[in-house]
Image (cartoon, rainbow, N blue to C red; front, side):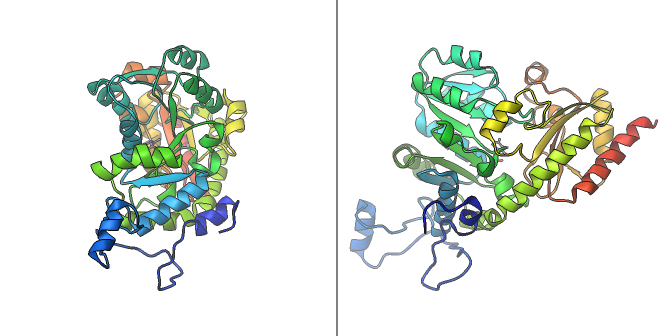
Length: 395
Ligand SMILES: *Cc1c(COP(=O)(O)O)cnc(C)c1O
C-alpha cells in the first residue's frame, strides 16, 4: 500500500491480506492450528527459516490483519493483540519487568491497572509508587531515582485529567524507564503518544474499536525490537491470545471508528455545554472546554476532547442516583466507548474498591457521573438528561 495514507483510509484498508479466494471482506480464519506440506516445512518453520503459521496462540491470519491495521494507524512498528485490554496491560508490564525493578504510575488509572501496580507487582519484588499525574513536580521527584517503567493514562478515568506526555517521557527516559501509555480514552485517532516520546501504547479494543458492545480485545504497540524480543516471548508462552472471531469483529468495527469517534466527540461537546448551563450540576469536566484546568495541554496533545464527559450532580449520592434512575435513553453501565450512551457512578462501581480516601484524592465525589456519549441523536440525549435533572426540583 502507498505510504502515508490517512487514518480513515487505514481503518478500512490497512492490513487487509486477501487469501487465494480474493474475497472483498477480511476472512475469518477460525482455526486453532495449521498444517505443513512436509516434515521439512514444519522443521524450517520452527527453526524460523520459513514463514508459516503454526498455532493460533502464536499467530493467526485474521488476528495479524488487525495487528497490522492497528500498527499502521498508530504509526508503530509492531502490534500484538490480546484477549482483553487488561491482558494487554499486564503483558506489557510483566514481559518488561523483573524482581528488583521500580515502577512509577499515575494514580488515576483504570481500576484493574491500579490493582496490578499496587498489589500484584509488589508480590513479585517490584517496587511501585504512585504520583498525581497532573503534577509534574511529583513525576520529577519520583523519577529522580532510577526506574524501569512508567505507566499512565491520559485523559484519565474518570476525572479526565491530562498528563503532559512529552515532559513525563523525558523525565522517564532520563531515569532509565520505558513509558507505557493506556490510550483508551483518547483512541488512536485523537492522540498519538509515540509522537510525544512514549515507548509502548496499550488499548482495550473492547471500547471504541469494537464500540458496539460485542467483544473484548486488547492491543500492545511498540518498536519491532521490543515487541519481538520482550513482549512476544511472554505472550506466546503465557497465552493471552485474541480469538480470531473477536479479531474479525474488531476489524469490522475499525472500519467505522473515525465516523463514530468524530460523531461521539461532537455529541460530548454539546452535552458538556448543556450540563454546564444547568443549576443542578456543580462541575463539568471535558478536556477541551474553556473551563478545564488543563485545556491548553489537552489541545496540544489531542485533536479533540474525546467521547466522555464527567460531571458532578449537586446534592451527593441521593440526588445523583435520582438523576441516573430517571434516565430513559441513556443506560447505567460501567462500560464506555459504545454506540449506546452509558452513565457510570464511579464512587459505587468502578472506583468503589479504591476506598473513600483515594477517591477524594482523585477528585471523585458521591455526585460524580462519568458519561460515555454514544451515537444517538444528541438532542435526545440532552432531552433525556434535562428530564432526569428536572426530577430534582420535585419531591
Ligand atoms: C476498559 C479499560 C481497560 C481494560 O480493558 P478490558 O478490555 O476491559 O480488559 C484498561 N484501561 C482502560 C483505560 C479502560 O477503559
